Image (cartoon, rainbow, N blue to C red; front, side, top):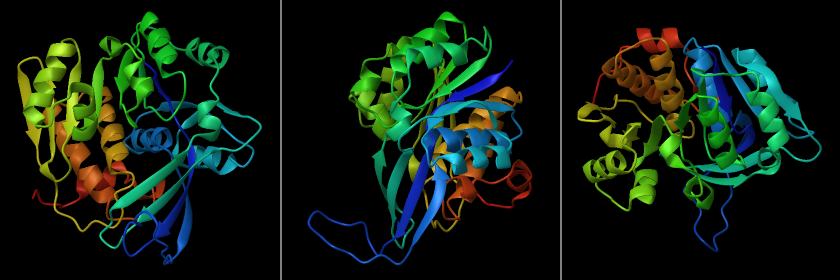
Length: 297
């Protein structure tokens, strides 16, 4: 079984601010840092740090070599990453004194996928392999349809949620990893239990992990429900928290952990990540997660 993450690679420009800027407001920053990120890259590095061999597929622009270097540094396979003319995807991220963030995303090379490129990448994978997807790249519907035809297990983090996600056949998804905002956008519900009930009705064959911020997470599969709390930490930067959770939970499936073990491992890894600035740099190694003495809130 091989693992493919078909996703974004971004250069993150992170600005320290007193508070998230309001419309019409001008605010001086306390500093700026450049980090490698993108939901796809973050999730790949989280899986690699959790001990999984993961192949990343994605496009970078002319200034994107640091993104490829970051993959190599953290053990992510780069066989299917391609460099193209133009700019890489990038983000402008505000991080306030409480560690909350606001993100402006420019798609760049992440939005330059072609069907020929997708076909070439997927030709190296087969039935039973796992593909992880997010919505920071184009042609998401084509990737889902093509992976489904190959019999791959499809994991989707439908973020950012927009018309592209609505245009996909979500009945082909094996596992949803989403937060309550995205769950509400798909179902029209606002309460977690109602979101999960609606997702079960719409996609009865899919497993679901719904993350709830400070209220932890819930796993739902048929009549089975597992709840997981959060671990007590002081947040510095929440940028990669969700991606860390996603990467670690997928790794738990591959490594044969129970749902309960997988949720606890993912929650702990996510908690550690928010205590550090940046995206990929904040993701902890598996040994650190296993040996941490964090307490549940």
